[in-house]
Image 1: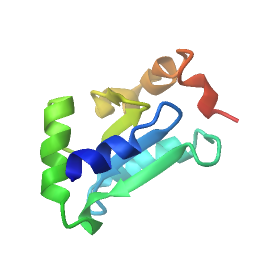
Image 2: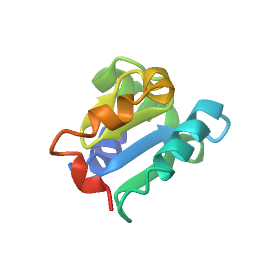
Image 3: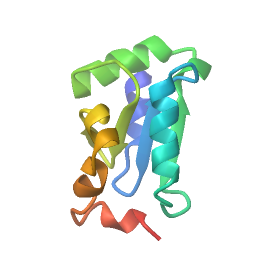
Image 4: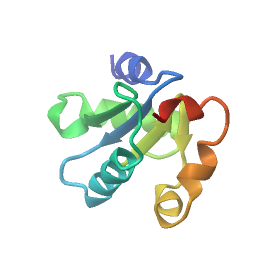
Length: 106
């Protein structure tokens, strides 16, 4: 069930953040991504604290990304591995210059 839920969120034309409402890094990630002015419908924040299967989702995120910590930021099906590096540099802009990511911007 958790696997199906996560996989349903990961689409080639979407940026998804899996986070928790109590996590300041998750708030930073959302704020940064909202500031990029992605096209409507191409960004989603999933608050794991509202889900009864939160632990199972984090276990699946561990399986596919190597970590169950949040935020887990995906561009399409690709996880941004080290959010702290992205936040402190142009890492996100650099990673989004590839052809599959540029469609997100207005």
